[in-house]
Amino acid sequence: MNYDQLKFNIDAYRQTGEILAAAQFLVHQFNLDDENFAGFGFRDELKKNSILLTANGEIGELQEVMIPRNLFDFDLDLVLNMLAHEMLHVRQKSPKMMILDKNEREWQAYYEMLFHTNFPQIPELSDYYKNFFGEKALIYYGRMGEGSALQLKYAEQKLDVEKLLQEIKNKTT
Image 1: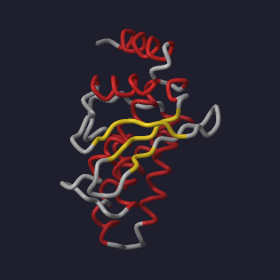
Image 2: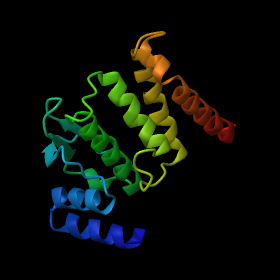
Image 3: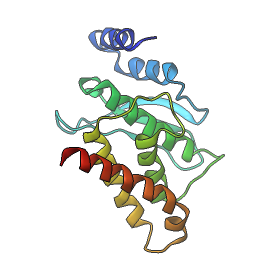
Image 4: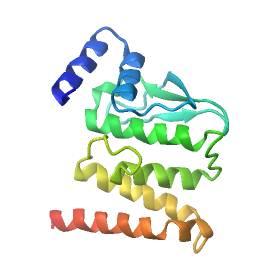
């Protein structure tokens, strides 16, 4: 399905108020589903220009991804990346993976948004969002603890993120 058809289908879901079905449609279309995924639910909207999704559930149990009703008021590439971020959390919290450290989970999910190593079918973000999410990734990297085993585990990926951020900065100067 091409991008225009995809947007057409999402708009049709929006017009009939089927926001949860639209999100499920994208999970299916982009092969993001996981056996640890319980489905979607609604969360409160933050602001008109702000978006937050969460994967809710205890580690080792099924996860429900909570989305705002205004999810599809945002750029579709951003929405797809946010869904991929949360669907990675669904996997991370599964009995198979059980990644206990929140900083590690967030690092992996933000790295995914930048480099699409788990979900290569997800479209690339604009440089603005790459910069924003790259900075968020580095915050979680820092929270792992200076010189910790986790920081050492992700040291190469940190260099990838820093290089990407520098490339974006060089484009704007």
